[in-house]
Length: 190
Ligand code: GRF
Image 1 (cartoon, helix red, strand yellow):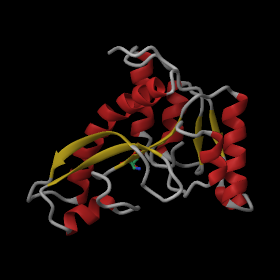
Image 2 (spheres, helix red, strand yellow; image 1 turned 30 degrees about the vertical axis):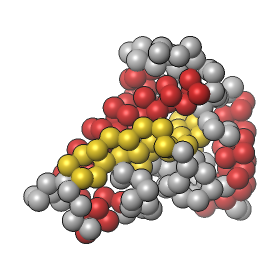
Image 3 (cartoon, protein in one colour; image 1 turned 120 degrees about the vertical axis):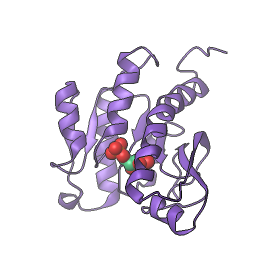
Image 4 (tube, helix red, strand yellow; image 1 turned 90 degrees about the vertical axis):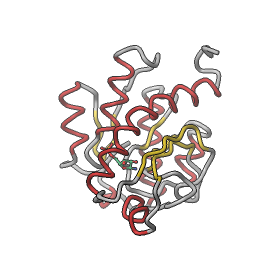
């Protein structure tokens, strides 16, 4: 599930196709026709579904449609990578322990939509990214993987975001692997 550039989505597709994780990305759900994620999916030949939240009566109804489209395709795990909508119990309940979010800070610091700017404003020397299981409260839930990224004096939101993205692309496949192992969907390598 994405609604932005989709670089994490693409990193996940490559991790699957390279054999880094024994998984397959079967569907991309977006809520905006114009987002970068959608063009990446077209290029990568991944099926897509556009569900415009403005055309749906409630958050619950949106989540019901999303859950149904995943269930129809036999999806085991769902990843939210830049999905900028608050999800409800409907989706969380349909994918318990199976719904992963990636967030651009070292949670529990800097929850919410402006995490990178918050880190810069707080003048922390270390930020990073977190992949975690989704719970009802936004940007909470059991942490699967984190990566630390130094914040440089010269950083802008753009340069910091770029370095955080590089780490996100590394940890997101690891988080998918871990979540799948926890559920017994994969043989553990350890
Ligand atoms: C990432 O920084 C992710 O942590 C946040 O939204 C951004 C999505 O980036 N939730 P992209 O669309 O995957 O490039």
